[in-house]
Length: 40
Image (cartoon, rainbow, N blue to C red):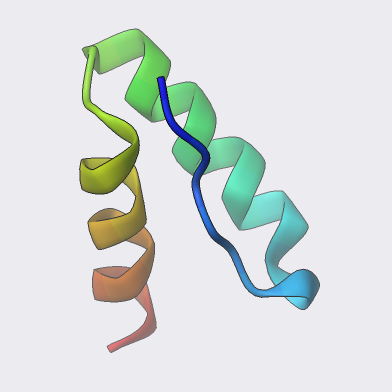
């Protein structure tokens, strides 16, 4: 699985997104998209 790029001040969100991605079997790209969507 690739790396998820997260803004430095978003470490907690990064962990949450990573956990969800693993549990649901999403790719890193999807996890990154989820992170972007949460910001909007």
